[in-house]
Length: 308
Ligand SMILES: Nc1ncnc2c1ncn2[C@@H]1O[C@H](COP(=O)(O)OP(=O)(O)OP(=O)(O)O)[C@@H](O)[C@H]1O
Image (cartoon, rainbow, N blue to C red):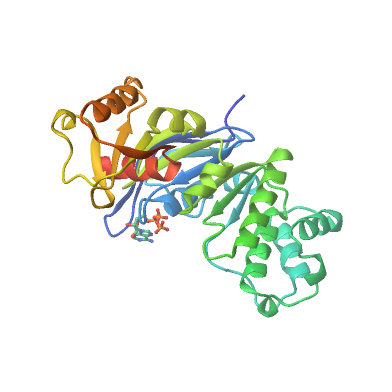
């Protein structure tokens, strides 16, 4: 199946000379949830803006469902719903009018049934006659999503959808994203909450200083780059790593009360047994042993740091 979004050789150099996107190549598959992660200023918003036809590329091409976003802007844009970071809507309009008007902007005939479904799905139905300015911040965010869905787009971009929202709204948004995916909508989201990507995404892309440094299935990424940690709680604190373990990836934590061994999945897991044998042989008593796997957050921090 052809990708729903195809980005090829994309560069963006702002008038200031800042090279915000560097030779970006990226295909988004139909129906997937793709999370774009990157530190502040990495180029996420610029990339989304370019795909949505709001930022002009310096070179390279982007297509949405086969339509070039520059030369065939209207057709390409009609495929896309964009939920921006910032509230950009008429404060004096009602929810119903704002969302219906958005649909009209894409040249779609009125469809009150669709608008009603969208508002009900976002728990906005009982606010349909309320003016935007009278809504809470969380409700305003829901309106942004309703607007983006008003013209039945095939792809939905969510730029930091849950920044600054409370836990309940975040959970609602996750549920809504899940429902949209079931309806076949492709979702691309940027987020600072890596747990969000961990929970939702099928694939993860990491962008750093305008370059896509990695695109991977989430499960593969976590299996490949995830590390296990073995923490050994000691009965007596140690001042330093024991002599016959200095060559191991071991750290001392909690003022010497714990030894932490990082198990690299690419290497032999038998190290754990050997480590415990050596501790016993050196008369180092321990109270407990605990293992944990790294989260996507740990992996992300490692990735961005390694290449800094
Ligand atoms: N209109 C503009 N003119 C000049 N430079 C810009 C413009 N917009 C963004 N930039 C710069 O381009 C780089 C990428 O910015 P962008 O907003 O795309 O990053 P981001 O990954 O979305 O960041 P954040 O996570 O902070 O939202 C930054 O260095 C930013 O200062």
